[in-house]
Length: 250
Image (cartoon, rainbow, N blue to C red; front, side, top):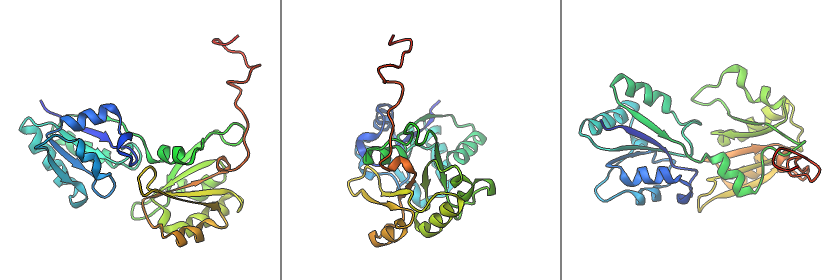
């Protein structure tokens, strides 16, 4: 029986799809891609005759209807989603509807935009003695956030943070972070379309970032990165220290 393959498209650069995802895309008879977010140049990998649907114009049930019709015809289906679908990918609802219809599926992970952003900036989220944790979150919008997960409560940890889907409310984000515990001089970078050709970076600290983002005209498709990992302080890890012994290096 045919199945639906969910493929993480990567953050934008067409070469940042995984080899397995690339192969699945090449083999697909039908592709349903997240048109508002996925780089359309990825569709150049599709074979001639592949039927392509833009899910930006479809609701959940229309998407699953296309999947069901294609699978019943014995066709190979790829659901191409931005970054890695395990973060704000809305795949749970698709899978639950597919289960109701007896449709089989598999998942091929991708490179998330928060990883692409770190590479573009040349930074590490987990700098020894500066931060060893990363919080991935978002502000409440049309999709609510549990009260226990508001930005203010996370800010109390002062660790590295990657904030998705929130740049249009940058002033409110900054207010919550400062009120929660981050000092105003905490480094902050907003990166628009990380790894895309039109990528744009705006850096400052919490006291300046909102104004800089407004001046740059960034209103969507951007990540807000916050924390001392973006600053000048760093410490070398113990792992490669000459005096640090372990089972591979005596």
